[in-house]
Length: 241
Image 1: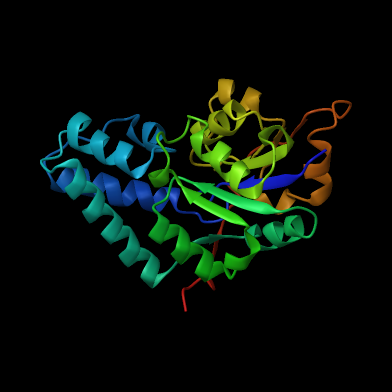
Image 2: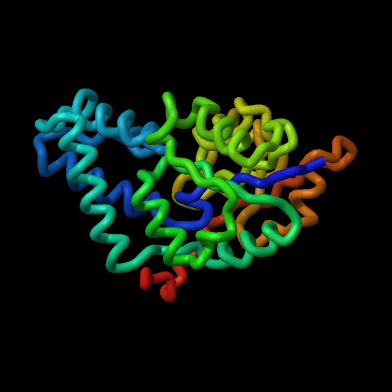
């Protein structure tokens, strides 16, 4: 029986992955580094400490990891102050789910960006626990952040359902022993191995219903897979107060 639902933030509630890619790609170029074809895929799910070290050491940026983190997050904060790009249907999906179960957020975003996003959505009080991988030993695909959020909610991980978009996020939640509802971003499709870890694959967050969540732990229910498409549009009303 499902006892709690834990949401990722980037790519599930906030359409921020393209913003992260734009900001980090420009930063790498501006500071003497070389963006690689697989950089965005590798970065998705990393904690702040992990991706800042990756930009500094692997991509050749001429800044320390600490400088990278400070400067990139400052630019993301500036973008969020102008507009938080909410995903259509995400707020309603969260509120529907909150009517049945306690909720948590397990995010790779820095704490200050999680706070800004939840303020923009008006969902801050909806989540009983929120955590950034800044506060865990390892980022996704390690299970640390999901295990920690489940502990804060007082729920066994095996009784949690996770809602994720990225391959590393799906791997993280599955490694924590959770059933996973995957909602892949059209621009960043799941790798086949990660997709096989998901119990349910939806084409948009608007398809997430309490009924879908409730069937995830029902062994007699078939796995539901719907064609993924890039149906995400930004909610232009999603602006911080």
